[in-house]
Amino acid sequence: MKKFDLNIEKILENWETYHGIREIISNALDEQKLTKTEEIKIFKDENNFWHIRDYGRGITIEHFSQNENEEKLNADGIIGKFGIGLKDALATFDRKNINVKIISRHGEFTIGKAIKVGFDDISTLHIYFSETDDKNFIGTDFIISNLSDTEMEKAKDMFLDFSGETEIEKCSYGNVLNKKNTFGRIYINGVKVNVEENFLFSYNITNLNSSINKALNRERTNVGRAAYSSTIKSILLNCKGHDIATKLINDFKNYSYGSFHDELNWIDVQEHAVKIMNNNEKVVFVTSDEIASSPDLIDEVKSSGYTMVNIPTNLKLKIQGQTDVEGNVILEFNQFKTERNENFEFKFVSIEKLNKTEKENFKLINHIISLVGNPTKNLKKIYVSETMQRDDYNFRPSEGLFQASEQRIIIKRSILSNRKRFIAVLLHEIAHVKSGASDATRAFEDELTSYLGIIGIKALDNKKGFWASILKK
Image 1: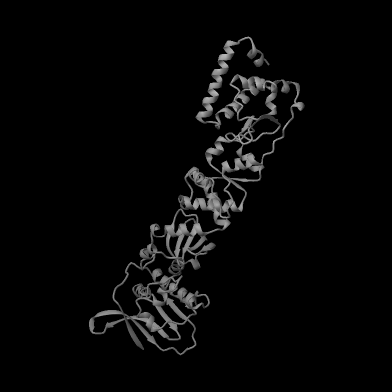
Image 2: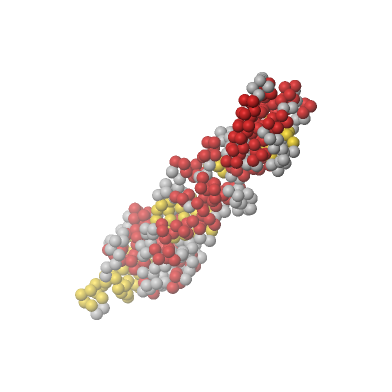
């Protein structure tokens, strides 16, 4: 039997047994990927010995002498880029009294302490190896005894392959995973490096940038969020699937309570989710303020066949006027109202079909307009309609409407039977005509206020004349 000095006296004393097992599993998974051979097996035999078995090229004595594996360093998607990991594992087994035997077609290997050549007072860890009789043996078999089931399960738990977490979507930066437990996990090339308590998903990063490479240590644990956050964001922004967008959007429901997941702290991710959702479903994106100020909004959205999705205000401002992943305009609240108004069909009523009271009130139009200066430059005609668009502010059917593009005022028929209300609505719309401004603007309010003054003066000048008869019911 020959022996080979690993030149290890003491190393990584903070490692537990499962850290060493993790390295063996890592090497087995890497060999499987490099050689494209069948999946590795981890099992316990009838003697209660654990086996970690791959079906690759088989370990050789040279593998124990390498500090870095050039093949792994130059390959994508490989876990063990640190060649020293195998030595660390063997040293940990020795320190923890774990017995290991390694078999391949290149030999049988065990570990033990021996005097270092030329240094009688130094004892180091050695590999003992001998020839094997089975030259047709496929792969490498690590046979480990004195190992508890708990330690093995802790080791397996550090790998995506054994986590039970499934892939939702994949992109060039990595994978989004359905997390199995409450916490999200961060994997790098299939090895768990951190746990995120408030992540919506788990992630497997396969495209390593300089920050991640710098943060990776030999233990490959506790890699900080600062190292991988930009990559997680890139993964999400490059995913196009409906499932991910739906889960992100549903998480917005918790936004107002402050209990949303951390991915939604990235407004770029919020926007991307909205764009995917807009392309896949009939949805209208609204804010809590818009819901509160428009009590009929829910019924209107539902009756139109849309689903209402609540989003934060800063996101609404970002998506306004934007298009989704297929170039469709994102249907936020204002856009929904615009499209609804553009597609609205009025049911106009001819003057001849009005009843007596309605006709009498309608005939007052020219008199009322003349009282405030006859501002009809931008007004061609006044129509009466049975149906009306909903108001942009309270989402209820309007009583009056000025359409500047058509230079027309439309009055809802139902108010013609109430003279006082009809006059009020007509003056309101005339103020829009004269000012050219919308509701709740300074120009419109100033114009409407001036009408109050004009009509007030004329009312005082003619207490018993025209206005007395106009206001009489």
